[in-house]
Image (cartoon, rainbow, N blue to C red; front, top):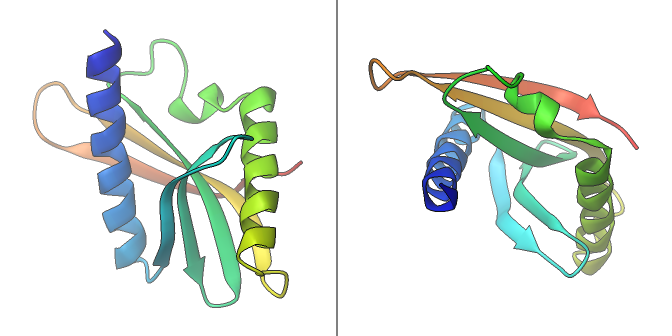
Length: 122
């Protein structure tokens, strides 16, 4: 089961990456990892840097994908973002935390992409 989830997650991140580019974002980093946590996508548009969590699902039986971003996950993203900002000397930018939900359809190759800007704050 884990392998299937990883494949779906990676595919979802690729779709989210392309979606952001179409919206005019520059991708600064993907799958940024440090010992504090991980951030799926870090993107910039104008003077704003967005730290983006991507959640992909085949159904909503257990809730919407964004509902899987709980307080613990948000805190890890926040701490990793602080590290990224300091490491890359980005103090002069605006920042926000976004979520991209991707829901796949079993019946065809279509997917629904929902980009939630300012999805959470710490």
